Length: 432
Ligand code: GLU
Image (cartoon, rainbow, N blue to C red; front, side):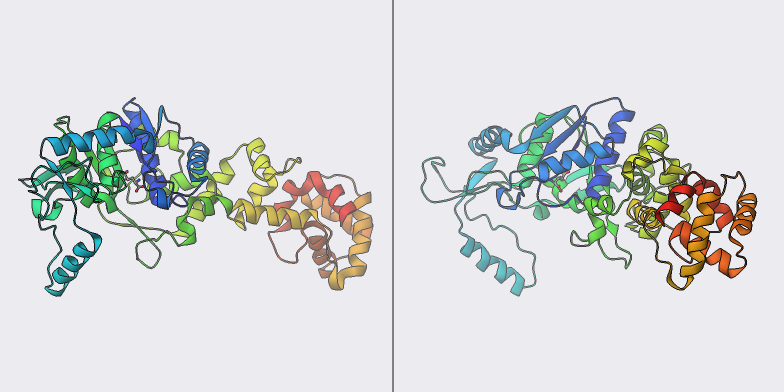
């Protein structure tokens, strides 16, 4: 059982989408279920509408799920389990105030030591947790032994009790912390493998410790995916525009191209261009590189051009929002445009009223000739007919022709463009 557990706190980051895609692929390979769990327990950070956006994005990528959970609906279980841990003396109520803790943190900093909870409230006797009026959090006692776990990508990892610390599992407002809610839910939902970004590595021993304290014995598999660096080699922050999946989609990059690109990162694949469905046949989690991956927008754009070329006419026309069949013309223009937005701009220029500039006279003559000339199979025949009808030649023929047909003085070779433009010549002449 696999899961993707996004928080509805911002635009989906490409690193999160990569985790979703890989979890989904593994669940399909193992013919097991895939869970989508919205981790919404940090109310202050939730953003309205993000939950729907996450679902929309996953659907665009062809990712479907068998189970859907909203984490906050499990709150009663989180509370029950926290109280169980308190009653078994595995966890304790901590009344230390923010101020007290901050003073201790500052002291540790002064001494150049990492801060660790000092156990102040660990052995308070007979606390009536529920009735006590002073606000308190619940901390899980740190483990006695080191916590070890195996990671498919990073190998075996080991964390000392000191570094796990007696950490907070329930906040003073009686909501669970991320680690507690996540560990309990993964247990209750029967998750068997967790694939997520490596920024969560230090949470894993805590989550293992939580489940062990709740006497859960089923082993959990892990794969922590290396972080994605930006083009300068620095961790790609949420604030960088192209780390946002929404931004990439709005730019006109196809979901299939984004998925393809994310699966190429730190991976040796049997081919460069593929669909998510195809990747299910050969993807191997264990073959992913440990090294951080570097995001390369140029490469993504090149992959996008290849995916645009592979689209069927109907889908490409739908993406271009046109009722004409512009698919062949659009595919031809991928030599100049990498995104659907850029392609649409190119095509709009072709089909809009043209600016004749210094070729006013020649364009007017050619326009008339174009309306009269027969539809011809080859560019050469078309060109000859048109030269004859217009009486123009050389630069005063080719430049105006290019303007009339494409709206710009530069661009692809006309003989290569002609077969794709042929069905529209009359329309272009009329509109020019
Ligand atoms: N809600 C966490 C996040 O979005 C989930 C991490 C996990 O997969 O456990 O980063």
